[in-house]
Length: 159
Image 1 (cartoon, rainbow, N blue to C red):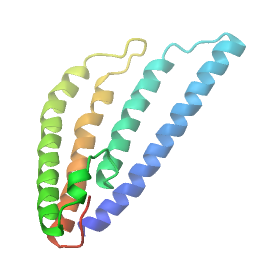
Image 2 (image 1 turned 90 degrees about the vertical axis):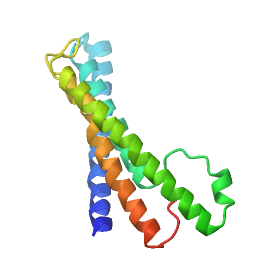
Image 3 (image 1 turned 30 degrees about the vertical axis):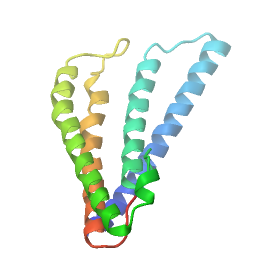
């Protein structure tokens, strides 16, 4: 059941990441074109671009963690026999979950404080950008739990 939820999450997150990337690209092209060809500068656009970029990075990182495509150094792990490799991968997944919990626990208070602080040129709380940290950390926990479930059900190594 968790596997089906995770697969749907990948699809939704992939679509969101694609949309954010296209929106960020289009807004920056519009910003450049308006500034150089029409002499118009939207002062709020850099802050909005920063908001989109932060969410894009964290959603992309979530997808990479879930698909085990994030940066890893597996030189020693790849040379291990399957049983010790599985144990090490379980340890890695539990360590990741601990880190993601720290991201949530640390990210929520910062997000609350930043909800009272607007962007420099835009009357919109910066907390919406910081919200990407605990939200995506929670998503990464779900993906790590899925990896643990796969490791424990012996459906293969997940890294």
